[in-house]
Image (cartoon, rainbow, N blue to C red):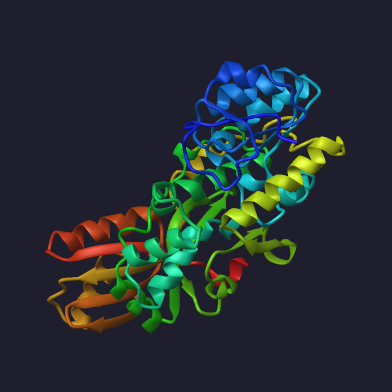
Length: 376
């Protein structure tokens, strides 16, 4: 039985009318609770309310990835100090039980490499765009199906996926990592012809989250060129996938990542565990691992997909130009004044210098990393 629900707007339409609601925090605080469920979203007032419940020894279940990414470690420590727990399985890959698994498997979660499609909404949108829809129409479709909120800026901008990657890194003990440390790019700059060029080059465009904490590593959250031979190329719609580890030691997770039913079911699973007192929530690492935030602020060296527009030179001249700027083309396709290029492996510096040189000639250039088939 729900004692009371604290809401922002008491008059807003709701599917259920059997739950007492209030917009008054004082009224809500005076109730008695066995478990508190926080699905307000955002940092405040969620942080204050969650901290108050944990301080009172009440377990909290949340699906709020922004809150967990920004303050999850301190809230977990507060919970432990009060003999209670914070549960947030629904905050990352909603329908995929990965958070508690990784929290309890430090050798897997701390393997140093993460690769995934962790935002079901953006994956659905790019799947629809690859089939000919515009971004605007695909977003309307996602909202109508319940995969996205009418205000879905966090999904489109890449912030949602960056927050999820932050949480995964923190689970591995990288407590110095904040979402602001990660390079993330939205899907709103993608155009239909980018998908066509990707197909001609033997791949697809997917919204990915990548992190490698090893020497020479890096991180990227946003669109990427995925070769057709890569396992991620077949992950369509709202399906999420996460690969943790390297080589033969990779641990795989996959399942639905968007939709109210999926999120609600995961929240309820956590509520059952919290109410039964059978779990400890998601425990913060006892100690932080070596700081890695600095090496995650740019993508790691690799191959790159370039989509070029307003190109007046021939394919041969363009290839010569790229080679002269230490970014030789491995594959190149053309259509009118547009070019699609898979460039050879290079650090981010030479890539950006080459893009600047191209744009100085009047070329409109967009670029994204290419996923390595060998990484999963």
